[in-house]
Length: 178
Image (tube, rainbow, N blue to C red; front, side, top):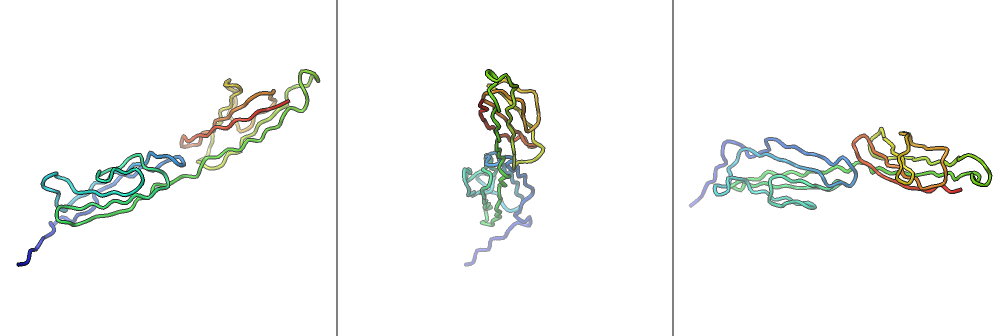
């Protein structure tokens, strides 16, 4: 006796997919939404069987979320007749946003020498997506400038928050001494 299983006329295949990549380095907000068509759904569940591998997946879910940048994810879907569809997805990992601060301390002691404040801090930023915006503060007080360098500084603690065009940000601190 030979049993013949016929695959339905509709091929078991991907109908559409939506992949949302991580926009910031090291993030875990990627998403994969797949919609399959054809084949034969499981008569009990009315669904196909999904098997995902990769960091942080829900192994049997149709769709995935909170996927980590730089990781690979594999899905194998099986219909009620044992026919399969499979695909590998890569969550991109954008260049890391980095910042290096150059600090120039005051030349002279303002209190004793009577000179004006001449400290300087410059932020050199790499990675991410240009243009960058800069938000400088001194001891939590906002400094009204949007450029990568602040000048004529007094002694104190300074902080800059740099945000790239995609909204990824990084913060760095330094101290200007007399």
